Amino acid sequence: MIEKKSRREFIKQTTLAGFGGIALTSLPGILPAGNIFLQDQSFFSCDPLPYAYDALEPYIDKVTMELHYGKHHQGYVNNLNKALVGINVDKLTLGRLCANVSKYNMTIRNNAGGHYNHSLFWSLMKPNGGGVPSGKIAEAINDSFGSFENFKTKFNDAATKVFGSGWAWLVVDANKKLQIGSTANQDNPLMDVSEFKGTPVLALDVWEHAYYLKNQNRRVDYITAWWNVVNWEKANELFLLGMK
Ligand code: MN
Image (cartoon, rainbow, N blue to C red):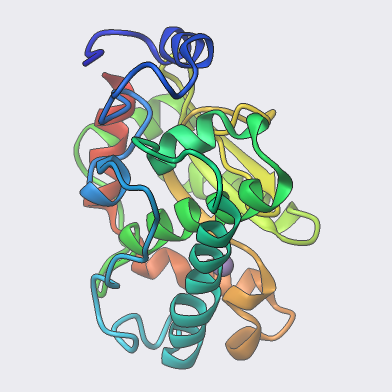
């Protein structure tokens, strides 16, 4: 078990070692807490949604949640499993797959990202969420962005400007600084192919499938609503993990 390695050292080592020789069960400093990310499994599955489909109403509607979780996310998982047939996935975790995704084909890249990103996305929302963060993440946001309002403005700007389908992120970067950025399609900041890298703290899906039924083309309305369901306790957990 590698406990104290920096993220960069770890990725380097993992890359050099390949997948065959080492049997690591976790990626310290890379992966969010929670067994969906840390368990070894040959094939992947959707964890149960941590709340009811209608629990995020009125901000995110029930039908969108049913389709988004039950069809879109499940679709990424099904396609990922199909694409992994014939590939040695013993001991492979979703985080490791993302961190080394350049070794795999585009189908695996898109669907591994889709599975990872959506798992994270569900966990970062909750009923009666939103408001202002507290704890260490609140201090870090103030230090990095001046104020929570400035942070929100910057994050909204990043999410609004994603061209086409993609994700907006708050991450802890390699220098242990909070950074706001975005990725296209289902890429994420763990991926070795991503220009924007770091440990995810917040994730916002801005694909049209995330909001079109309720908000049609008005992505900004969806982003505004999403702030009301952010799970800041989970974000703080991920932040602390990223700072280790
Ligand atoms: Mn989605």
